[in-house]
Image (cartoon, rainbow over all chains, first blue to last red; front, side):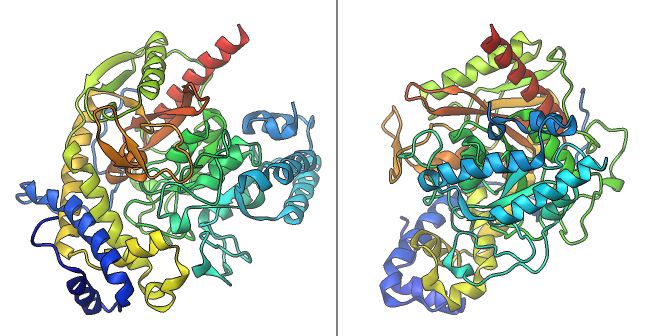
Length: 69
Length: 473
């Protein structure tokens, strides 16, 4: 876990800011899972996106297929 | 052979030729359900009387000369995320207590139009947010997990408790339980099958598709579900077939049923040199490589390929799925959080904390990944790889330890090889290719170009025919 990751009380405050009241007995468990998720997804910061736009969802037909069969 | 053991194609032929009545078939499958449900718990609800009524109606129509096609009179199960008017869609969750669907989902409508007979609704991992389906037991060993999230559908098909079923797949939820239970599962191209009336886990990753006992059966169900009616205005992601080039080999087909010719000459099968065989059980790898060699024996040319951006697959999948799932459950997470199972509740709550920046980075990563996979799929026609890196684990087992000492969560391991097809939207067909020494099924997936389902089904069917030929020797 990196030093920047929130503590259980901070997680509770952030959740409250999102409109979700977390009971005190859930702070530690939710913080642990949220921080684990954060540690997995933070790797995307390595990518150099340049002007790459977001793909909201996949759309078939955007590619130019050259199927041989 | 009892009627419940028949493949969809064999049952359809028997019904069309009046050698089997839909009522006999439904009775046989319902008896099988009565026998196996206590052990396997594949179904949430079983609608025996409704099924018998529908079977009698199918029989009347067929006798009167109104045969609708291969699904007419065929009994099937629907994952309990799929709406059927007048029945509850429980999502295998207490959160849905008292739910009643007001209208049919698009897929339920299309199956009803094809004359299929609904047996009941099958268990899912709660709201599809998990890879085990703990209520249900593996069809081959009841001490082991069914896999998920479409565990009930896969077990029902494997055990003869349905002639076919539908599942949904957001990170492998059709293919994983299909592989773990020795049946065929097809995750079609994103948007090919409309999802209107299907409870979402993650809108940009969700797919609906068939689970069957043979590849030919999957083709028959896919044909009925696409039905060339094309765009469903009730699902924004649904493809508009009219906008596609009718002459293209990747335009959706009127009939996906593969030809009998097993010759694969000219097809290029990509064999990954990285990712798909890393941290994979040696018995799984052996079976899959043997199956790939059989494709080569049928005429396919094997081409070693490099899977792109593998370092970012799990991060992209999570950063798309987690906030989308939390958004879907925003209301009930605030009103009835205690009704969720502990694992799902915690994931949904944790999802509230993901910054928009993470979600956008994942969407931009998806753009890059799609571009890279498009390039990859210009080199080959399909990619063949394991569906799952390990066979079904014991119920309650939480981690897998690999030979190099690495410890991986069971769900992470099962989703690892499936999620690239969800992120990129390409089709993936999982077929059984053997068993490990414990007798547990092993699955191989064929990944194809967007809308390349016909190629996947052709190769899968050719492979199955070689097995039948070997068995008959």
